[in-house]
Image (cartoon, rainbow, N blue to C red):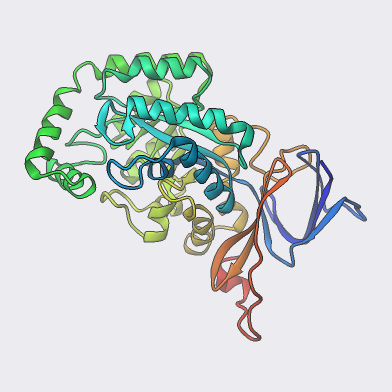
Length: 399
């Protein structure tokens, strides 16, 4: 692989931003930052664009929509995996954790057989991937049938992150029975009667959930697979999951729960769509409030990859973070949460996962993505007309 010299960039380091700086990459690694008089096989003049580490997305279930864009319309899985790989490259996400739910046969792609096929298809496609595709398996605690399926996938080395979730009504995401019914009727076209039957079945299936969760978490931890809990809704729930060895808290419901997680060493993961919309779709806390309170460790794209880079600049502007601090929410912090010591920051010796960001019409958009030093996405935006450029502070680019 030829070396590449990225010049005239605003380089975002872990603790500061270097103006009009440069980065030299070679053989898939970052060789030097601000190298004087460097020579390379290829020079890329970034013309003042922001250069960030490649984004690390710990939770995104967009792959489910690629596989099943409409209810009961299932595309060939190799086609779906190839498309979501391209989407992530264009979104600047160089390490996506594709979130796949194992919930028996609740609906569509969210059933054990199809989800396991998607996992294995992602793994088979890795030799052709533009980015470093990884798997986040989500275990629905009301499903007694997927324990063996998930255990087998973990033994195959196909699982990179395991989370446990409980979507039964009356707690977590669905604080009331009515919120559960409205979700099932709206998202899955159920009649009210069907939704009520689903709720009753969900509640009955919680029997034995604790033992199943303990079994799966112990299996994952024995294999060195990071683990997370989902939709934590109380300090007690955090304590319980922490005692089970869980390493992360996804989408804590409120500030008290998020504070409890952080105070006992659990990184928290909040949604970038929540940041952009200014609210949670389920009525939980606003992600920007967690950022302002200092209890949001990581942001994930949740269901929309393109939101991740936009959220970086949004929180920098709205929470008065430096650009380096905002970028850490999608780079350094998730890397540390999952034990990825070779990425997440721009420094010599690190994997050359890098993204260049241009400001276009007031929007931060990815112009280039390098994955392990290989250019996997690039585009050119038309220049702004005279007098149309915004000041960096107005764009949320202040360091």
